[in-house]
Length: 120
Image (cartoon, rainbow, N blue to C red):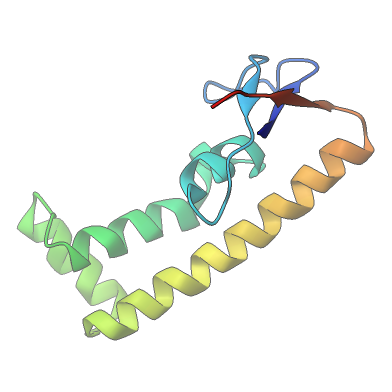
């Protein structure tokens, strides 16, 4: 089976990415890793924080009730279905940007794509 890997030719200059050889993440199965590697400013993108907060709201994982109340006030009263639609829309936007950046990196020859035959 052919597996696709990639590596940045020079360090991208942040804490999340490096020049290791990494298996190319499939954004349909592992969106977070795809975004980490190919979204321009993953660590500072406000949309990532918003998706995380929306997910915490769905899963009832807010640790601080005052922060939860503040976030609900910010987004308005929404049901789970509306929140899931918001998450999906933001993720689609992020994925599209990451695809464009991936393509730009390929065109500028800033990443190397490596195919390796794996047994098994």
